[in-house]
Length: 371
Figure (cartoon, rainbow, N blue to C red):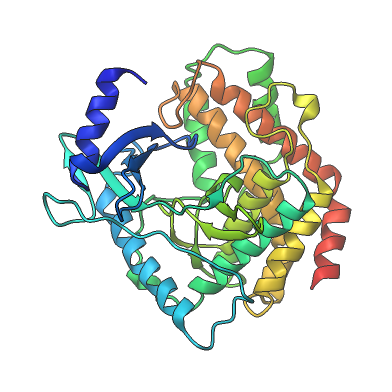
């Protein structure tokens, strides 16, 4: 980090806390969309906080993100305080929004940049990949707790922050559009991706068709339940929070579960270059599903179970298609380190999809046994 950037970040942090309290501002996490930092404060009754610049390229109305966070966090807090809510002695925690000292709002805007600050949950850690099957089960439990906490929330209170999010047919339409122009030069890797998508066009609309037929219904979803958006307690290693609620909105819980499994059951991670190391770990899948379904049995109906495998297969395919589309369009959505970064990411997701397909019988059997 350059000195100029650090000085600038200090000036942004001062919008939320007196500058005399700030010790340092350091990068936090490795998200593909927003820029995130940890603001370290002097130990004088003040807690460190997370400072985040919301991507204006992705979120056209960032105030809606704040609104969704505010109403959902209030709902969760009330439910956690309810005498009828039993979390089995697990210390589930939530973040809180910080007011700007300048406008008494939960954000700070400077020119075209939109900044938000949230409380930092200490005595906890994140991980980019699950280290063992116990981690996988905890991730499943964490997602199940989150879905259970948001159950019953009035959907009309949520503002749509992203159009057509996880609507796979829309992503497929975008892919078809950009593939006609082929900004990137054609090569073996791009041709492989083109063929891979074409061979699976029949599954593109499977979840959206189930919504239209009335089999599946919208609920509140996190929207980005990858492994590093879970916090684990330093001592117990239990999942104790879900963070990064930018994509919280209405949708299918199948989107969340599929995305969570996609992230947690790939031991190689999303940035692996050696595709021979990319596979869908069935043991992690079984433990994650066991944890998730232990917290959500009362939420799921017959149709929900019917489409679980389809979601597990579809979501990595969808993300691979999104990465590939962005590569063809010139890398305008996801942050990249080099021109072919999104192409490499797409290949990882397609390898994961193929691994899932090869284990379809075992995955469906696991789902049936856990019902």
